[in-house]
View 1: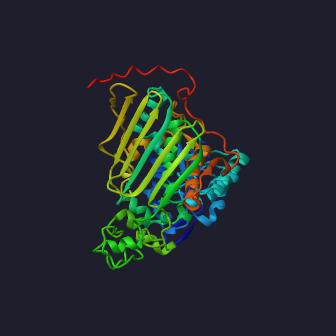
View 2 (view 1 turned 180 degrees about the vertical axis):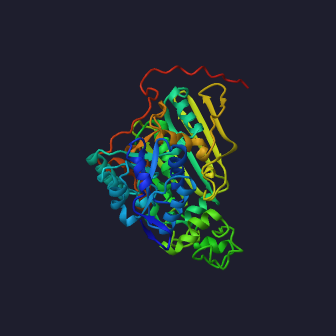
View 3 (view 1 turned 120 degrees about the horizontal axis):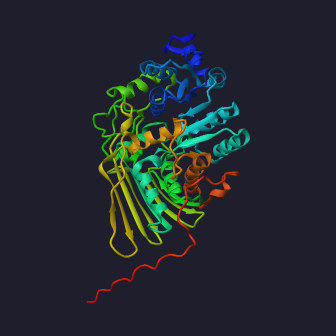
Length: 480
């Protein structure tokens, strides 16, 4: 086998692994994009689901991270997969012959690998967001229609037990059919600030928080409602993560990055890559391969994404969503209320504080102890508190259930239809893409005009929107 001595990267096929695959007993996977998020799939394939799956190839543009990923396989006691640089993606598919390509690259490049993998005969799996613009979304939809290969978009929040419970209550009809939704999502100045340090701070890379982050939230609402968004109006601005704010906080100016910042001792947003073993090995030690700095200044003028956003979405079933996202708040989590014909469902979650789960995957999206509250209030009468469904692990227990659904050859039947395809991936990002247009044009956007050939995702049955309703009980009027 050939080697890249600078990184210790093994190139070419891994004979033992390929020999095991010839039996056809396990599905063959390749992963492209080896930042922090990919490791969940890497470990799942090589440990939890090794009887059903095997990892045959790894691909990234950073040779150092490729070597780290191969080392991880060795530590997992698994055969070391072949490693390929991103320029050899076609070669990887030809040589390693994966059945499925998992895409965990930078958001703006998802379409490149999804489309090419389908063209080369592979089914695909992608981290959210599916992509970042309507044009790239159209490429994916067209490739899916042309090739017949599958696209699976991974929305782990759907699988999180307390969020699935919300879906269960809505499906039950207890509050009737939903007429409007009020949804507020808050990012704190630990996690929220981190989007402004990374490549996410440039809209050309991430689509901004309206796509990279809010695609989670829009997908939840789409799935909760079982509806398709058709119209968006929005406003957005950046006022907190700016050079002017750096000076107001007492700094002389913004700087390039934390690692070399001359005012690191004064800055409450300083993050040390060197002191975090996970971040150091994955990013600081690999900078010389691609020049990417993981700790860019949150006040740098390079940033062009918003930190304060408000969106109104109209759905094909006439529901209206009022949504806000704020990236510099005092706590992390969300509050949502569904206003129905028979009552109101209120649900909120406080998430634990984390910046980047480079050392512990369980930290991602974890729910604070006692942080889930759900209440159902009829139009008239006393409300009831709902004992929340719970889970363990990252994203409130959602990741484990999602991985079971993804990797088990015969996953349990799912009445909530939580698995998402390219249609669900598209409508979640198109809300954000439309919002981004609104930020510039100050005009509402018809989502149906952004792409063609979209279709409607598969949704679980929801309460009828035309049938008879029970009359609310008579109101008791108190006399003075």
